[in-house]
Image 1: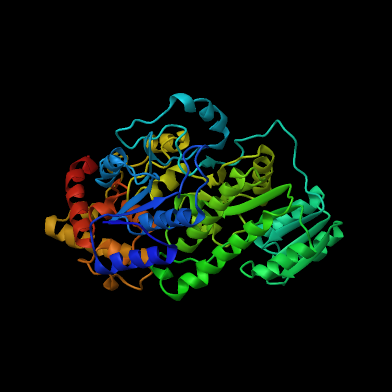
Image 2: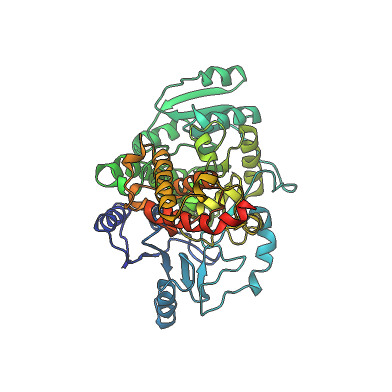
Length: 513
């Protein structure tokens, strides 16, 4: 199936319809202007980039039937059409592709501190014209991967805030830490927007440090109110830290939920960027998240708004206006930090986050920088459990982790005697009980009776993290070393129990030695 989504709400309804109908043919979205692959191209369209943010989440939530994303050239000639057909067959192994005159370019993340070296190679690293292929230069969304402490800025002037700085969402969470940093760096007046409250007494704290503070109730989707605020408090710099925090899968955005969680945010971002174009700013700092760059199960609203914000930042950079866009992993102050640790996403201490932000601003990065503390073994395993991905293929940390761990089959460790000593049918029955019990625990059910042995794991609601957790539990219960994809390869409890029984039967003699 191939679709050309017209808007975010339309695309959400398309995903919901395909999911409800149970269609199995891969769904591909075609866009124009969603990504940029070269400085000579126009900056990405924010509405089109939003569709890619949504598609990255759909890929993780519906790995069985999701096809991918393809950005088309302005002119779809015979050669481009041939490349498109090749990508749609799945033979290239790419699911985020930009088709251009140089070839079909797959999306990659590269290290931020390798950017200069890669740009130096750009003249000789053109992709082939016959297949989806990505060189070091061809990361089609201009995103760069960066982990804390690996990109030092040692040259050029340091930016210092002066006069008035507007911080959206500035009274709580990350915004409050940014406000403290700005005050310490010399900002004389901080305008902190939100709902008008100051629950932690931040204004008094910053006032005691010598900064004048204005706490304003100003929803960004109210253009007139935002324009008045900017006119009354002309900023020398803006830090946009306000973001979506509510979990929601793609299908959950149907109907009024899209307007509630997405539409207002997009309007607010548009107003902020458009009004900022008339201001003489020394810095415009955009906080997005790793979700907008790589996707995340249950994070559809955040992925869409963050991809939209990153694209707006790209358009500002293309006009030669100051902008710094950072897609953050969790900070230690985030409410979800502990839960995300299970995904392989560690948290940045506020001091670490501020240090990365300082380097990004001083470095004058034209790209969006991804800043996160990542356990590549765990994160890569979770991210690629349901479907393979080449997104991180150029990162040496990811490659090293895969070589050392992903899918490694080292044979059994300590096989539970009561399992391998049982005969075939009895062993399989016991293992079915084990699978159902652990599946129930992962899903939060009260008992194994709530897990139907013939029902598919995906239908039950298993996503990447749940599949990995079930795999880990079964590894501990059986002593077998199981591949990360075992829940997808054996898609029902009955099928998985049969597989485990066969594996134990093979392992039993060795275990008894």
